[in-house]
Image 1: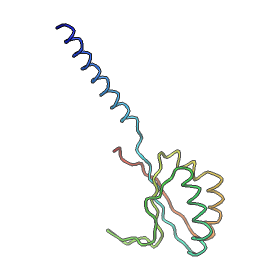
Image 2 (image 1 turned 120 degrees about the vertical axis):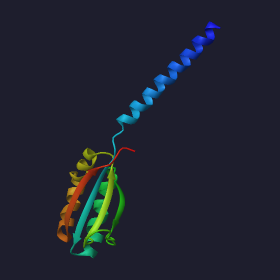
Image 3 (image 1 turned 90 degrees about the vertical axis):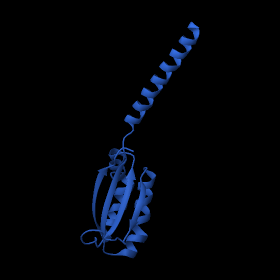
Length: 128
């Protein structure tokens, strides 16, 4: 009979330790960072052919994912932007900053600056 109590107590202790470990792991996961860009393009054809493929390759290679990109923006409140809008997701702000400071992206950006004006900001996502 005592061995049954010992086994039951050991199981309950194991469950408790496991629950604490799972909560600790969830608490350590950082929420993603999102980058929102407004891009005012002056030469769409050159931007699309010369800049976009190089910039996207550099950013995707560094871990960025594009969630949305386009010029068809629907205004829900206020005036819609008269620009191209992109939304990207990154594992962290540090990884995003490293990607935009990389030599590959900086080279692409020299081309992009000839055909567009950029405005961008980052926002931390909410824990899921």
